[in-house]
Length: 157
Image 1 (cartoon, one colour):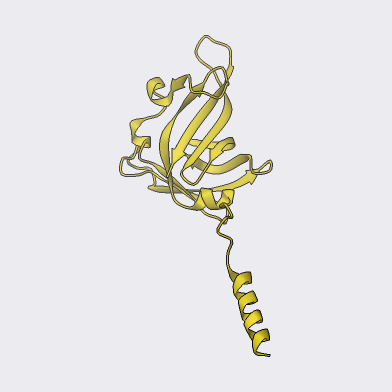
Image 2 (image 1 turned 90 degrees about the vertical axis):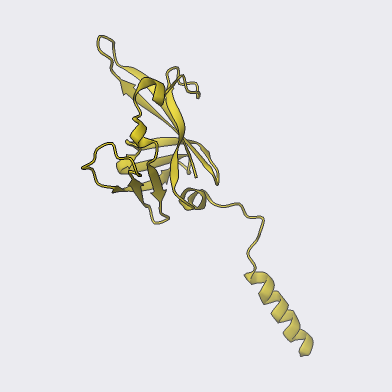
């Protein structure tokens, strides 16, 4: 009887122990802490690399560089303007919702979005410290026909 109790106790301890080798899920990586802008730009030929940085094109104002985005595991999130606001009358924070799509290869962001961007993004990379997103969009420049380009946004913890 004494041995049976020891075996049962040992077995219950093993069954409660979390596996250390399990990698974090995509939701855990996305929601572990706030994200901030690292780099990004326009992928004119849509080959997966930045051809023109947002900073060089003037599409990204310096006041956006300190913004953060925080994803919660319940599918909600908060975009924070940071210390430097582009519009002093804008709210400090705005809510958004998010969800994974297409077998967790795409991220749908609804609402005000992150860093002025919303919609469906392809996840190029998601790790514990880095989130790289791409999105095709159509731009129209004066005197030119509409052109589809890629946007690449790299975020970090």
